[in-house]
Amino acid sequence: MPEGDTIHTLAARLRPALEGATVTRFEAPRLAGPLRPRPGMRIEAVGAHGKHLLICFERDLVLEVHLGMVGTWQLARPGERLRRPAHLLRARVGVEGWEARFFTAPIVRTFVDRGPTPISHLGPDLADPDVDLDAATARLSAVPEPDTSVAEVLLDQRVAAGIGNVFKSEVLWACRVHPFLPIAATDEATRRRLLEVAARQIRANVGPGRRRTVPDGLAVYGRSRRASRRCGTPIRMRRHGVQARSTYWCPTCQPSPGSA
Image (cartoon, rainbow, N blue to C red; front, side):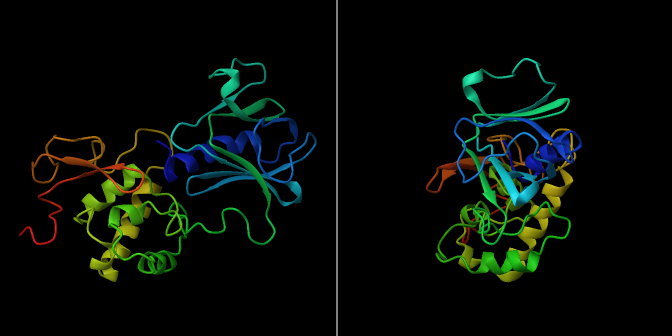
């Protein structure tokens, strides 16, 4: 599923094809936003912030694509067969020799990058090598509902951008933190440590290859009832929070408060 590492990898794949090129074709049947990129416009940059892909055109125009849980993409030559049915195409950006195609993306919109934007609310991007972890930690400590679980807070992109369901579970296991502990029950050192580990794991997975947080794959995510790689206890899974997102954890490595 697309998390911060996936979108930064996508940006890196698209950058050589799109950056500096001139638009020859643009389609977005459900485009939201005030302006539309037009043929003849130059693409100034391709980047990402957390889970948001950003294609930046001249005149400060930005195309934002969020793939959500089901979105996919294709970098293809003009005329090459679509990887998905045409009715699922949400955006097509064509330049000389290449097309970037996005399918079933729930967010495809433009904005002008002058002053506040639709992504200004996002926290620091954990895939950024120069991420401001002090700012992210401050946001983590200022969550308005202190009874919210650590697992839910880590998914809040307003705190820090880039953590999804996989890294949430992996980071909590690495830091030995029980996922359903209220954020108010953690100290500042633990909060900082969670973000440091998340940033390190996300950056380590930017690029090709299978996602890994331990040498042979993932530590807990998707491994329900299999042995913990640290202690051998069977991994548990529970759906939790408003969106009923799945969380994986080891009850021995990450004991609940008062279980000792």
